[in-house]
Image (cartoon, rainbow, N blue to C red; front, top):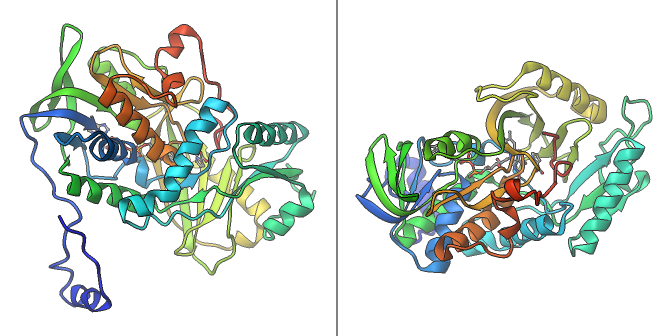
Length: 418
Ligand code: FAD
Ligand code: PYC
């Protein structure tokens, strides 16, 4: 499919014709009998994996299978925060690789993913927080990741609408700032990858749920789906919150807890917050979308679950905190609330690589923080699948680490504790 450039005239023509002739970005493919590689899950990670397999490893006989519609999962439900200020050198290398790929994504995909490096601020509310924030800044710098500490006056200058008074339950004592971090337009990421996949000849198959695996003598042979069996030499699971269910079908267990995570947005207002503010003590993170809506993220539910909504008391508690720290938002009306099912690993780090079944690979364990990693996760998974061995960047994130004990403890690095 060739690229279409829209002139003002063609936009008017499409508008007047009710968009009847608007060219589709990708074709909804029918499943073929067999593929070299099948990616299960049409979220950002699955699409990115297929993209790098085709674009960098020259594979073409690939399909992405999605049980619902493309981008109906967490890729479109998240609050779109992209940052790389993780603690361990292995993690910050992986997330920083992602940040570099975000910087070139619009160019690479020839699609505007609206990546906006407006900075991410992480608040410290106690002496312990302060110590952690400073430690994180120093660790980031030692690992070559841009990060700085803001004392209270500097923070107030950077985020003028933030209530830095001492008359709140957890007064703010300081913050870290990663200036190169920011947000992206999550839908555009899905569309950009899908269009590139169409161009590269990769099949995108929607409304096709994987409900079983064909495994012979420990090796994957294919998948069973609601649209019939499909043979494949290699299969990659990229199903975020549903990872444990699919792993169980393939005969192995994952150290993953499934939790519900919520977010919501307000009515649109004039620009008032030009950065992202997070607090893992308060379990809130706030930004303003390009449309003007205030975007709020919450803590995950305290117990495992696959529920469709999320607990009301979490929403209530977070809203109370938003009002205390951003008093000018008190009178805002909320427009939408939603949730997603996240895959929290036991050490707060992702699982990226081989499984006990030969030819079956897995990408999971991102919890509340996988959106930021989308391009790097796809990039390392493509390498792992094409060469049947991990790249140096994902080698430390094997499933096997839970057996050997070489854990990658990033439990404090999430925006929200889980
Ligand atoms: P998904 O988009 O969920 O893709 C997985 C796909 O697999 C789904 O489309 C699903 O339908 C499909 N699937 C499942 N089972 C099957 C099956 N049996 N057969 C076929 N297909 C199947 N991360 C950040 O970095 N920054 C943030 O600000 C952030 N905020 C978040 C806020 C919320 C409310 C939530 C819920 C998550 C947030 N995250 C954030 C986490 C991030 O969204 C996820 O880690 C990431 O999107 C997961 O990767 P994905 O996009 O591929 O997942
Ligand atoms: O990982 O930065 C993050 C994040 C913010 C909100 C949810 N996750």
